Amino acid sequence: MFGWFSKLKEQGVVGMNGRNAAYVLPNNPRRLYPLVDDKETTKRLTQDAGLNVPEMYGVIRAQHETKLLPDLLEKHDSFVIKPARGAGGNGILVITGKLGSHFLKPDDSFVSTEEIHFHISNILSGMYSLGGMPDKALIEYCVKFDPVFNGIAYQGVPDIRIIVYKGVPTMAMLRLPTRESDGKANLHQGAMGCGIDICTGKTTHAVWKNENHEMHPDTLQPVSGVQIPGWEELLRQASLGYSVTGLGYLGVDIVLDKDLGPLILELNARPGLAIQVANKTGLQSRLDKVEAVHHNLQSETQRVQYAMENFGS
Image 1 (cartoon, helix red, strand yellow):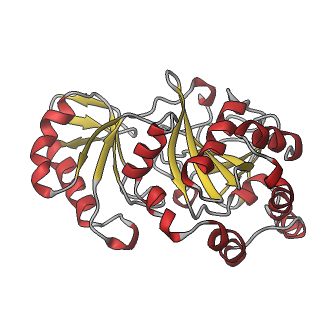
Image 2 (tube, one colour):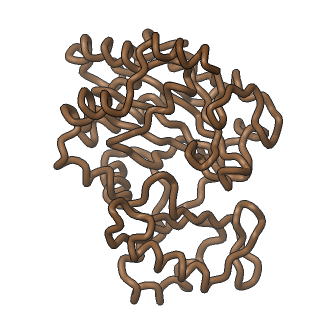
């Protein structure tokens, strides 16, 4: 454990202060933050640019609009409710089915319509939003994860986080839901992080609760060597996130739907740094390389090609 932490340090791990001072502040003007801090704005922006995103079923902006909820939910057997300005996966409610007047969650427990009303009221009050400000509740398509993840995800939907620097995908990881994370793909809530080889799109190492693991803690299936389908297209979608927002240092979260393919789930102007632990390598050298060549990379195709040629494991 301590051995590979020391190795990580030698390989140029980027810390929080270094990330903010050298990459976030110089490359992400604050005037652009609203483009990614509000998920409704992000969705409309990426849709207009031709990127694939989960379909929006509705937006509840005020308490009196919750009266529209029964009609809205009646039309869908599965859906996700999330705060527009939430962070860290907090406040997300996933519904996978219905039984009478009750709604089924991924852990096979049920919630009533009244409980959903209460959850949305909490979202509107700002309980889950950045800075505790009043928020909106988004209701959208519930992703059906690609069968490639069968056996290495527990109940929820895995997602892929890609760090994009000046348009170049520099590092990626697969986040796998676990029983502890309650089916959510958030490392701070107990999900597992797997490094991904940028060149091939195959998973490499896996870390769960800051320890190396070769198998998923719940399914006990091996998590390395999994080929992410359509990898080059995922990198292209991530690179387009830079073109769409103008944010030079960006985290792009993508899910793979079994019917719809890759869908952009979220963009983040301050992506976390645990991706370095999952990949057992630091970001610094990769960011330095991009800094030296990005002026010569004019298109998404060139940026993706450069990444695949230079950032393999």
